[in-house]
Image 1 (tube, rainbow, N blue to C red):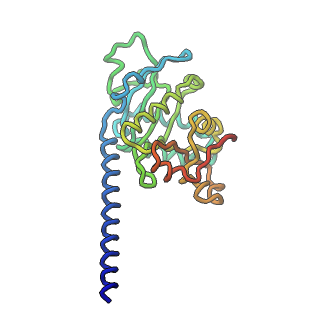
Image 2 (cartoon, helix red, strand yellow):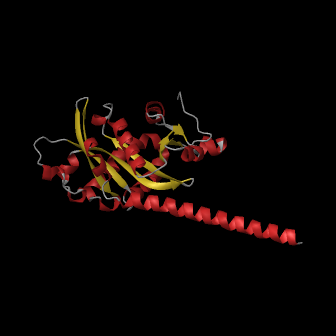
Image 3 (tube, helix red, strand yellow):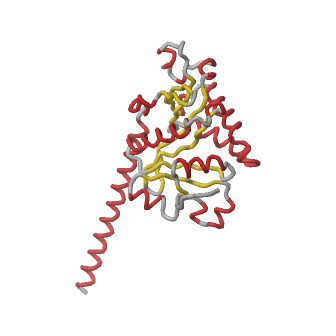
Length: 260
């Protein structure tokens, strides 16, 4: 009888210890997300990357927050999304467009805006706060990245919601440059991975992420969770992990796509 009591007591202590460890880990992850989200401008740490001049393209980058988007900027985002993505969503676009409209303005949304360089512009003009830009400033926009710091499978990650470019800025290496910058931001802020969603119908994007940037289909993607359910879904979730723990939780079962 005494043995059973001691065994039960030991088991209770072990459960209590495990609960404590789980809570402490969750607290640590929440703090990582809080700190990353509290940074007002992530580009400040990467100033050499804020200008891109290659393949006949000259642009500069600016940071933005979802709750400080001007009306012209919101309209620009909506229009570019429609131009670039409507054909891939098909009949789902009407619903998806409403979702994207809600997503873009939340406080935790972070942006990298891409603007055409103007050699005649003064430094003050170039550095105007995003929410004060007028229509002339909007005309300079040629694309944006929308990302957030979130938790997936107990792993803090940078989730790329959108990477959208105007046709004039495509095919010049800018998309790869922006994704590599997001990866640097993710690493600096102690994220375990970069995660994103791609429409299956968007073969160009799927090839871009899996072949050029070496992303893999994540274990949290519907096709990996349940192939039958995945077959019914129009998207895949891709990831690139930075440490063994993130790899174990987000890549197990994920296979690199070699062909489309």
